[in-house]
Length: 261
Image 1 (cartoon, rainbow, N blue to C red):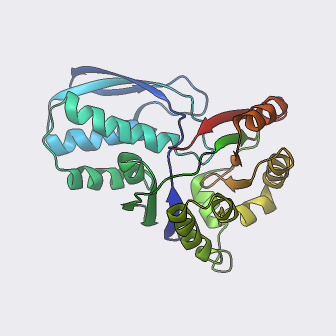
Image 2 (cartoon, one colour):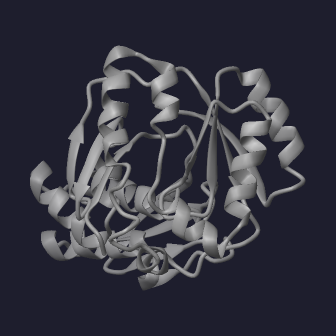
């Protein structure tokens, strides 16, 4: 995989997780299609790593109710794994430093370190280098379009990248940080970019269609979510975003309205 370099923020969209302490074993249950139960789930992996670290005899049953679109580049699995690390540290009364917890997060997956820290941040390297940015996000409503098509995997998306497609717009990342410092909304929107967008659009033209639909509906900027395939559109007013949501909720698998935080 290529090293990453991106600015990330949280959306006010989340899954719901229930934790029930039990003796010995770890169970993870989710009845949402496409989400694995048991050992293949990142929540299970996070719980097992913390259990091994602490050598506790405690176990847990975790039930996951999905609201974040699956395999769409929105990091729902990573967010759930980070939540599990936080909750189980308290539930099992594990004494662990923040740095040690981040080390476990890194072993779970690339985006789990960011999900553990959260907020507006610069993420670099293998995803474990997370620098919080004490800046203010522009006031914008985010409309996320999720297509019916699904990418094979995140690993597949990374294999579509090449030296010719990675980093050519890296100056926009610096431009975005400057725009955030100066509270320049126009430059923020024009700085949105994702190296995955070009290579993945060649395989999934729906990405270009979602982008065009959002811009035609009044979005000031768009950005492919993570390693795809969801597309985010940024609207200045909630009215415009809501109208667009009503139009696209029949055309696409999901049209989710949220805010940045």
